[in-house]
Amino acid sequence: MTLKDYYGIKMQKFIISKMQTVDIDDVFHLEEIVHPNHHWSKESFYNELLNNLSAYFCIRDEKQKLAGYIGIWKIIDEAHITTLAVNPDFQRMQIGQALMSQIIEDCYKSMIKYITLEVRESNIPAIKLYEKFLFDSIGMRKNYYQDNNENAIIMFTQNIWYDKFKNNFAIIKEGITKIEVEYCK
Image (cartoon, rainbow, N blue to C red; front, side, top):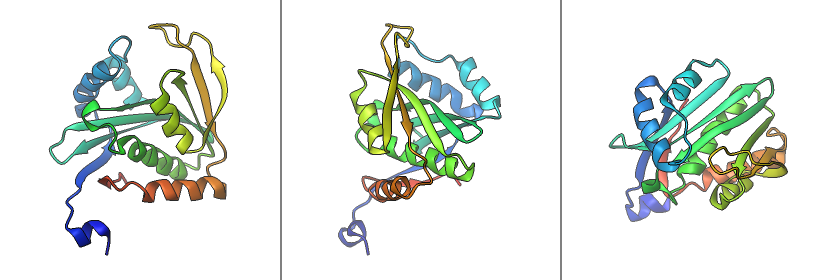
């Protein structure tokens, strides 16, 4: 019996599913909120869904409100996280961890070994999230972001099949206790 069962705590439930074309209006609206100065176009999201190398996921609450989304490109044995956004109404609720967990599970299914990404050097909460998942900073892309020429930190995982990574991932996934998540199969 878990503590939430013992105390009768009702946790907010979220469902992660593959992003579909019907999600794009909500995704684009959240994109505009999270990245007001420079964001992807609707056409970019439509194109990504047609790309055989990509995988995109949405997380919604029980009322179907979009809490966030994430996307990757899978190339041979490497995945590149292309985007991750969490609705400000749902921040600090482990939504980012749930989305990262979904991506890592998807990478295991695709026999991916390494995951990489770029992140704004000023985005400390995102950097801390990635470091929690054992991403290391391996370099910098100078003036990477077009809206303000901010530098991007390049982050990379060790081999996700190594015990250190797998054990850390299991601890993180088990530690998602603020919400109840139904992951995409």
